[in-house]
Length: 221
Image 1: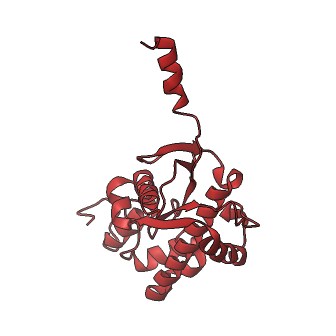
Image 2: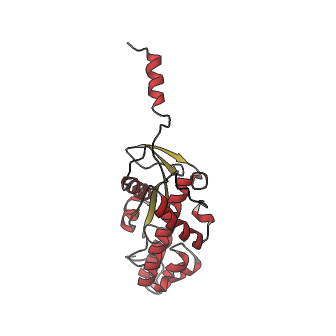
Image 3: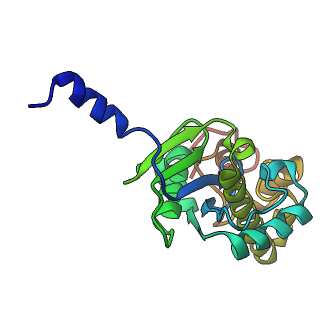
């Protein structure tokens, strides 16, 4: 019979990184007032390195577009997923982000032995995972995921702009810029706005308040 000491050592060894595919995961769109939150998962090919991978926030739009196409062409596999505005409003933005990340990992054609996730929280996964703070600047697979997620979400915002040009989605990408907040006050919220976010809720409350009546008086909805 094996000793208790040996059993503990054997169990601990299960936590060591073994050989196999490693996936990087990141998200885009936690902070904006509108649109879905998008997550991407990427397994890079060591035999086909991609130059210039970095945190998407440090890259220009042109650099992101160029790297986006290279990642799709050279990575072993990629997956992009999202959580909708309705899911954000129902579950909160953190849980919706975890949901999008889980969907991205589950969408990979190949199953990794480990998933490296940017940040300090992990989605519920059926594979070994590790959260890495500032991982989008430290791990190339996470950098690649951050680029895919950012480009995908920016393109979604272009579509939103075509549908609702008066909000200026193509410029601010849904973030709470002065221009966006002014448009919210002028036009109210559209179906793509996150009603659980306070600036959107405040704009809806103001729109629902009759002229000359203080907010909070009467039925606000």
